[in-house]
Length: 244
Image (cartoon, rainbow, N blue to C red; front, side, top):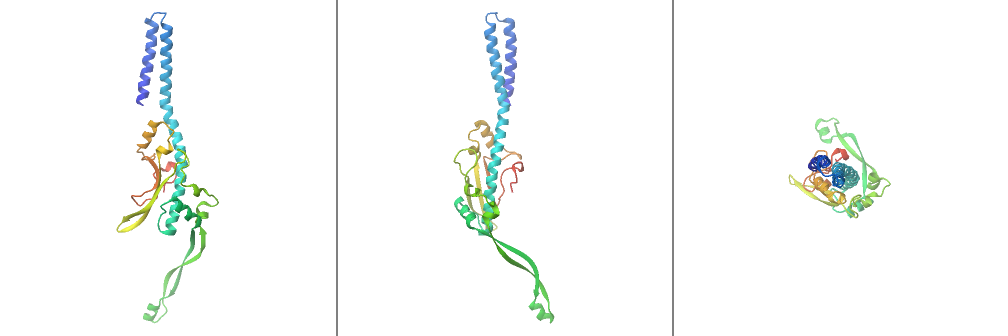
């Protein structure tokens, strides 16, 4: 915005100079100075246009890349939640997570209410007395891979960042956070914005890394989960999709 105002002031000033040249400068010098000034006006006009257009273009490309990366982070989160459900903890490495998806199975159960004779109360009162119970029947198993990814094998490359710097990998870790003397499993997967936007305007990338907004991705990375708190959501707003 500052550059825009400066450029606009210079353009207006240059136009004024053109008029002064036309009025006061000798005829022999007028063509050269006039052309030079109009070229300066054209250059500053282009720079002013780019100062407005460049952020628009940057935001459009940024949003497109973020949307693709978030899809991958959601896949990682879904796989990690399945890992915790089956094993009680999160996977620390992508190799371990992929192996889990290839081999693990969910146990299918059915919950039903029933009643049985309460022997103690029957003995105490001398009449048959029942009590309510819950019976959980095991119906079978289903592969985790089929449940999460159906016929797709994209989970085998979930460690690869799909856009941005070529060959980039997501960073992932897992462990435990202690709360009320209980160790609770946590995980985090992330990628730096610098990696996703490596080929974009550097000044705009620096601004993006410092953003604090309810409509933006705060911080210098896109991530899901946290190693510091019990959290499995992502740090992106709902405009990009469900973060939970």
